[in-house]
Length: 206
Image 1 (cartoon, rainbow, N blue to C red):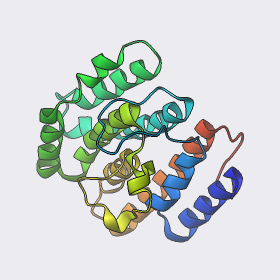
Image 2 (image 1 turned 45 degrees about the vertical axis):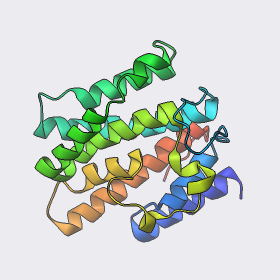
Image 3 (image 1 turned 90 degrees about the vertical axis):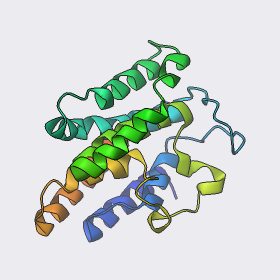
C-alpha cells in the first residue's frame, strides 16, 4: 500500500467512524520513514533522523494544538509549553540532547497524571506534551517491533501516544455526547491534514 492509499484509507475511517485508530496512525507514521533499530530496554536517545523528526513534529503539533486547553484550567503551570518549546529547540538543533533529557523527570509526568485526576480530560493536553517530548528523544513507541501489533484495545490511559492524548483533551471539554463526537472527528480531520503536510503530500485536504 502506497502513501496516498494509506491516507485515503485513514480518511475513509474518519468519515465512517469519526475516529482514527492506532493501527491507522501507525501506518501514517510509517509513511514518514523507518524507525532506527535499537535494543528493547534501551533508553538511549535515537539519532535525529528525518523520519523521527517528522513524527516528532507531528506529535508536538498535537500537543501545541491543545496546550491552551490545559492553560485554561491551570494557567500558572507552564511545564507543558516548556516541554514543547524545548523539544522543538532540540529538533531544530538549538539545544543539545542532554538539555532535553534533563526535562524528562518522573516528577513531571507524575504531576501531569495528578492533574488528570484533578482537572479531567483537559489535563490530557499536558500528558500529550510529555508524550511528544518522548517522541523527539525516542521516536514513536508503537513503531517498535515488539509493540507493532498493539491496537487501541491493548492500550490503557497511561500508555496513549501524543495524538490520542491530544484528542482526549480536545474532545471531552463538553459533556454533550453529540458535541464530543463532532469535536473528535474535527480533531482527526485536522490531524490527518497535518500529517499529510509533514509527510510531504501536497494539497491533501479532506
